[in-house]
Length: 447
Image 1: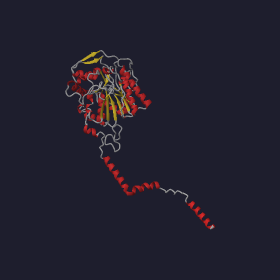
Image 2: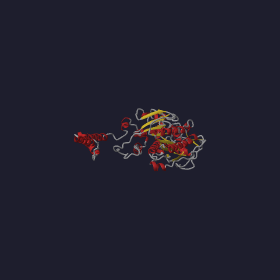
Image 3: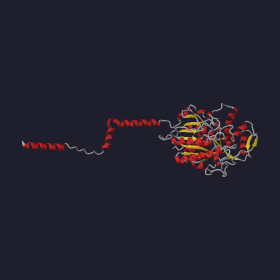
Image 4: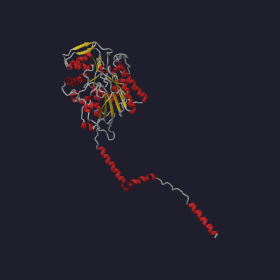
């Protein structure tokens, strides 16, 4: 009996030892073989390959143009063929309309799969004005979604009516001196009266710029300020380069505009340095073209309207003051290149061809009425004596320079003015327009 008890005790001890847990050793390559077995089971690999082939075929058959929809339903030409002289029509139109999508690889042909340009959401303040409406045309044709913000102080709804019904176009009646909340990728800030007749009545440079900079900071948008050659005042340097600080009367009759734009540039650079806002600054010189206001006091519109109405051409002072005149399509091209580029600026955007007021009057006489008389009047206060841009910086860094000289561009503007003054066709068509709530350049009685 005693030996039996001892044997059972030994059996229990052996059982306890066998019940102790010992983990199994890890099998090598288990993390690799397990997903391979999963894919091979039930022909899953075949279905994955079939899915990849279907997806590749689907994306390969998609249209290559981001503006495919807009060209089908809203085929609008911002400047009709009749606005281009016959000898430059083909070359200029090709340059003017096919420069969208800056910075893209192979932008001249079909964009490779996966590199298609995404349309941007862009706000244009003053977009119903002279320059602004032409800019909107280009952006819409490029395939972007555009929000126009304008209070119609000098802009006209007729300038953008041809975009009504386009789902990529929105129009907001709003004064930029009041804050505005939008979600956008880029801000073209053009809203500002640019003619002495208007800006002396309603100077809005600083507050509107401050509000738009605040919007750019909140939503992370890139901001472009359209400044002016008026920041140079009555320059002591000729031609004017971007590093020149100017010669401005801070308390003169024009200072609300001159100093307002200088302050706007200061605010823009402060937001860039202090808040990290992406900014661009353009200094615009005298610009002319269709949709310009007929009676806003600027020299080109004055001369053209007076000659068409058989009135004397009014020249202020001795007529030896000089200005440089660029066609609106050249300016729009420069603004878009600046926005899409990598350089802050400021950049002079103007035509370096220089004309005295008497020479301009003679060009108008040759274009419209050789018998038009010239009438001299006393010059206005603080009227700059010379104005000519040095555009070397824009040529080098933006690859931009104006293409249309005054003698070719002026007839295009005359055709538009003749239609609007004499009512040859319905006012407000896509080829006409009026004053600009966009900043278009230096403005004086001879600007």
